[in-house]
Image (cartoon, rainbow, N blue to C red):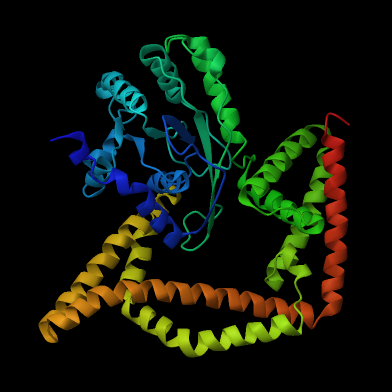
Amino acid sequence: MSDRRRTWLLPALAPLCSAAVRVFYRFKTHGTPPAEGPVLFVANHPNSIVDAIVVAASVGRPIRFLAKATLFDEPGVGSLVRAGGAIPVYRRQDDPALTDRNARVFEAVHEALAAGDAVGIFPEGLSHSEPSLTKLRTGAARISLGASERRGIHFPIVPVGIVAREKQTFRSPCAAVVGKPVSWDDLTGRPESDVEAVRELTDRIELGLRAVTINVENLEDRRIVECAEAIYASEQGLDRSPGERVRRLRDASETLARLRDTDPDRVERLFADVESFAWTLDVLGVRPADLDRTGGLHSTVGWFLRVFGLLFVGGPIAAAGVLVFFIPYRLTDWIATRPQIRLERQSTWKLLGGAVLYIGWIVLLSVLAAVILGPKWAIAAAVGLPILALATQFVRDRWRQARVQARRYLLLRRKGRVRERLLEQRARLAGSLEQLRRDADPAN
């Protein structure tokens, strides 16, 4: 069988992954990846197989991933992995006796790059839930140097940062930040056996990944740093795009690490103030930027019209969708949250397992419609039920937004003194954060 027939899913991988990730997450991308020619994409790995789906969606072109060989043996998943053009990697922790096959794996990657393909790799090796990048493996560097030496090709190594705080939660925010290519022109031609070159390129890849990811010492730090960034950005009116937000979070994390060594008491005091402010906003159900959005008469009338539209048009649709899909929805959640399923694998079980369950449920209902009501009703069910599922999700998202807007309006518009005190506190905290940043800047 030809490679093209074996990898039948590869040409459709990017649009399918984009659709899947936008159904599961509220997904945004930032940055412009190379649209053609050979490229090696390197990404952090917080979320098992879903990370490959996120990267494929963000690069927008066919991409072949290096995947652990054990995935190829898993029922269902193995067939999809092969069809998507993945290349197996034999890890020592899976089976030490098979690691000698990796020489052929590297050759397969070199061939793909020489053919102008995009290749994706996760240099951390294992998916994890740590608050920072783990130690990078040398595979990406060795692949790049080997392809340069043996095939005489040079290509960009492009970092992709996956940022998802509640990665296991359906319809939670997720962003993919495509960074600047890693500079390695001066290493071109040096062999993959050159330990110094491999170490140097691995370090540069790590720097590239750190520039597009959030790295803190612990999860509690990340929550506070994210709140501090939101306070500062809303007070200063800064760009809230994913790339700019990640850059500020990276700078804040580095500032925190430096000042913890030189002035830990000051950092802890400011952290306590930020945490107190964050707790108050959580109780009120608003974010720092919401304090600027009280809404006038025009926006309030518009909001009421949208809510009534959702109530009379979307309400019955959502109710029908929840009723029809209650069983696969609850079953997906139950399967994914079993104790033996690690946190970093829950989204994979929800996305892929949910897709199987929903498709199976639609097929079952269509068959029942054919048996009970006839072929026309079966066709109507097969066409209409997926539309109903998507419409239900759309309406539920809009209801969530409407509830947030209503809460914000009632709490901040009607309780002006509360809003004024919160604005004063936000301004004070933003000033303290700016002073902290200046004191930590070595150039000052």
